[in-house]
Every structure is written in structure tokens, then in C-alpha cells.
Image (cartoon, rainbow, N blue to C red):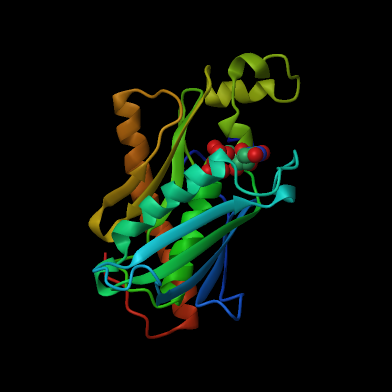
Length: 251
Ligand code: UDP
């Protein structure tokens, strides 16, 4: 018996991509992992008023979720979580960008979550990566993000909200869902969102919420590396369909 939504342990939710949806922006993209939808918009590079003499360009990220994107309406505007996620997404993207070629310019990336079912930071990073490429920002590679983790005793990829909230003790009292304990096993969930530069097999961020054994962590990270190449192919194809001549490093 497979996962709550019918997937296998190493199966990512359906990916959908839309490119260049905002005419006035330098680059824009929607990236969807199933019901998690992220819109990213890039403004820039543009001259920075205060940073004209700086050697490096400046990358700024603003992440937010729309109030209706979650079942329990979210208060509009950024709170602590959204400010922290903006910083995480900035750190995930920065190592890919040749900021030293962008003397004193500013790149603003706006990540807006349209619909959320867990994994909004990873969908947001992928959307931002696409929007940056479309804006012509010089990059080493696309940054690819995905969550891996342990649900009960099982390693899985791209956790949805139901999996992130997994608790076998609570499910025991649920006549419809208790059968899933047979698949996942006992325990709670550990979510590990990561971002990867696939061409260098480098992680730009690794976050971990929960507990996991060393061996399982290795297995989960290897799964993320392997799948990042698959996700990159899908993203690359979407871009190439738009711009036949765009060159990305071979991996
Ligand atoms: N979420 C929610 N309301 C909030 C914040 C989050 O319902 O105010 C849900 C949403 O589905 C989100 C998930 O909780 O995707 C997990 O949020 P988390 O902070 O772990 O980040 P994410 O997995 O989205 O990167």
C-alpha cells in the first residue's frame, strides 16, 4: 500500500511550470509541486542607490503566503516565519549567482505562495531559480530544492502536509487513516528541505525539523541528490521550450 496520496516513497508530486507570466517583470515563473504553488518574480538587476560603489551585486528575497493559500486563513503580511523563510531562500539561491559580475546592482526576488500543501520554501526556490534564469541573471546552474524526510519509519521525498503532520499515535484513533500506519510505521515526521546545485552535487541549504538516524539521513540526502537531477531536467526543458538556445552546464 502506498502513501496517503498514492505515491511511492521516492515519487515527487506532479510538477507543473508556467514561465514569464508577468509582462513588466524581468523574469517570472510559477512552480507547482502538486497542490503547493509558488509564484516568483524577479525585478532587476537594477542600479542600487546606496550600493553603487560595491564590488558585488545584492540579492534580496521576500517570501510571503497569500491569506487564502492555507486552510486556516493566514494573517496578511510577513510574520516571523515569512521573514526567516525569505532569508533561507536567499541563502539557497545566492551560491548559484555570479554576484561579482553585478557590481552594485540589486536583484529583488518576490516569492508569493498561491496555494500551500507543505514544501512552500522548496517550490519557492525552484520558482525563483526559473525566474532568475529568465531574467538573464548570470548563474552557475539552476538551484533545485526538494524536501526529503522520514515519516514514521519510512524515508520519503516531497512530503505533503498530511505527511508533515504524521503521528502514528493520533492516527490509531482514526478509522479511515489508521491503515496507513502499516505503510509508514510508528512515530512522527522529520522534514528535511534541501536546495542543491546539481552540476556540482553541492547542497546550498539543508534544514532539518525532527530527528533522524545518521544512516537514514544519508539515504534521504542521496535520494534528494538523485531526484534533483530529475527536477532540473523538467525545469530545463520548460526553459528550453521557451528559449531554444539557452545553455546550461552538462551534468
Ligand atoms: N502552513 C499553514 N499556515 C501557516 C504556515 C504554514 O497552514 O501560517 C502550512 C502550509 O501548508 C505549509 C506547511 O504548513 O506549506 C508547512 O510549513 P513550513 O513552515 O514547514 O514550511 P514549508 O514546508 O511550506 O516550506
